[in-house]
Length: 530
Image (cartoon, rainbow, N blue to C red):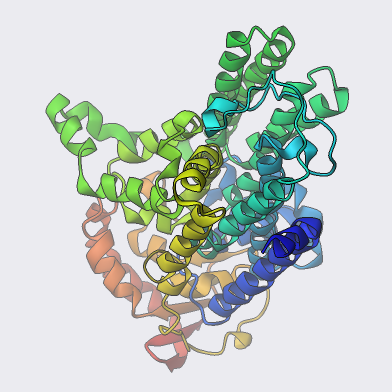
C-alpha cells in the first residue's frame, strides 16, 4: 500500500493531467451529445453564442434573441478574451468545450491549494526542515505539532500531501454539482472556479512573502480576472478581500494589510463601474432587482421569516453540503464567501430550492464550499486516523459519496431519452433570419438575426422591459408544439408574463398566415415566408 501511495505521489502531476484530460473528453462528449440531439433548451447557450457572433460581425454583444445588448443583462468582459478563439470556430460547441476545459482545469490550482495548505507540504519534495507556516493553523487540523518546535523530518509522511491533493482534485472532477454546472447551458461564471482557486493559491503564497513582486502582480491580475467574469462575482471577491484584510489586521501584518486595502479599492471601483455599464446598455435603464425583491416592500417581518424558513431553502443548502459530507460547517470561515449570493437567492421572489444547484448557480458556491472543505478535512481526517486507524478512510468516503449522488444529483439524472428529431435544419440558409422554439435556438444561433418564439408570443422582452420587435423579419419559423405546455403552465402564471399570455396564440396565428409550412416532423414544423 505504501509503495502504491509513493508511486501516486511521485507521479502526481501526470495523474492530475490524466484526470483532467479524462474529464474534459468525457464531459465534452456528453455536451456534444446534448447539442446534437437539441437538448439545450434553456436559452442561455443560444444567447451567448449569438452575442459573440454579432460582436465578431460588427454589432458589439447584441443579442437578437433578447432584443437588446447582452451587457444590459450582465457585464461579462472576460468573454472578450475568447473572441480570437471564437473567430476560428463560431459555434456554440466551442463554448461548451471551453466551459468544460476551464471547469476541468480548475482541479489544477485546487491541487496546489491543498498542497500549500497542508502542514506537511513544505517538505513534500525533500527531507529538508518544514518552516512554520503563517498561513496554516496547526491546532485547527488537530495536529499536536507546535509550529515553533524544532524542524521535523517529513520523509515518512511526505507522500500524504500530494495524495490528499490528488484526492481533492478528483473529488472536484466527480462532484455532481460541478457536472450540473457544466451540463446546464453555457455561462461565463463557469470560468470563476479556475480563476478563484488560482487567486487563493497566490494569496496563500503572498501571505508568506508579501514583498514578492511577482506574487503581488499575479494576485492583482487574478483579482481582476475574477471580477471580469460577471458583475455579481464582485460581491464574492469583496467578501474575500474583507476576510483577508481582517486577518492581516488581526495578525498585525502591515504589508498584507496594504495589499488587501488596494484590492478592496479596486473591487469597489469595479463594482460601481460595472453596474453603470449595465444600466447604460439596459433597455430603459431597467433593473430586474425590482422584480426579484419587490415583494419585500409589500410584506411584513413575519412574511419575510416565512419566506426564509422553507423546506426548499433547506433542500438547497443540504444539496450544496451533501457532496462534501457536510464538513465545511466545521470550518465555516470561507463559507462567508457565499453570504451575498445565498442571501440574493433565498430572498428573491422564487426563493431557493434544488433547482439552484441543478443549474449554473453552483459556480457562485462551489469555490467557497471546497475551500472550506479542505480546511475542515484536515482535522477531521486526523481525528478518524487516531480513532479508527483509517489513513485515507475519510477521503474514500467523500469520493464514494459523490459517486452515490450521481443518480439523484448529477450526470445520471440528465434525461437523454427525450431526443428531438425535427425538420432538417440544413435547408435554412446560413444568413437567413429565423424565429425558433427553445430547443433549436442554439443550433441556429450563429447568425445575426435569431429570435425566440416565446418572446414573440408575449410581444415583450424578459420582465416586459420593452416591446419585442424584429430588426429583420424572419424568413423561417421553427415551431415546436411542445413549447405550448411551457406557455400554458409557466408563462400564463408568471408575475411579469401572465398579463401578455392571453394574446399570445392570436399573435402566432397572425404571423403564420404569412408563412407556408414546408416540413413537419414529431410535432416540430418548419415554416418559410411566402
